[in-house]
Length: 300
Image (tube, rainbow, N blue to C red; front, side):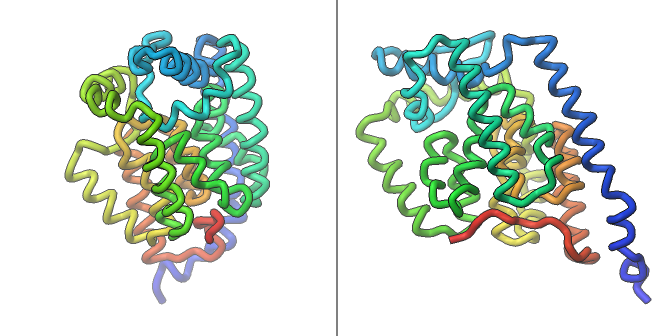
């Protein structure tokens, strides 16, 4: 008998269920401690994006805006959502966005019917505390059966990738149309003209979790992702392959993560994240454990 098939995987899963939640709780303490040591980082992304939006509305260059050495580096669509916050003081923006992110995280985990301990998935916690839009992107892709997904692209343009993986072609079409319309009002020309400088600023301030820029590792990652199927690959591709990613990028991948892959992705090292994907691909191909968490995001 095949040795892998002889193992009682159901028993193994029952006996080891506590490992992942314990890991989440322990590593989330480390994430929270980072913000205790440097409280200026709390809600930083929200205040940075709002300041950049204010600069754009004032006729200035949003990509000249920086806070604590971090430059605004997002594509033009990410300016629009923060118009709603430009009237607020920076500290209030940070608090409001962090509070909204907490609520969205709770709603999303409930919608996905995941155990409560997913709320302390360290990349999700990191995204909430820094006020990053990845938490809202995940929510827009999942809540209301994903019907709000086209709005997610105006927070993070790579939200289009999970939509393609889910084959939500109608929503992809709407998104492309909205992006085309944005050419009329957003400073796309200025962004393209400064792209080299923007990328340089981003590289100087980002400890990437991605294998982007390493052709061999990228090729391995693409093959491993596609072996998992287009749907799951769509959810997992951005943190692994998008340039200059960070820990909280993994938050948007929750619908495609297995518990143990999620635990591996709590360690923001590109080679570790790639190894996790490769192990999952081999695991799914040769072991096929019943009941393993797969992509649970809504589909059209």
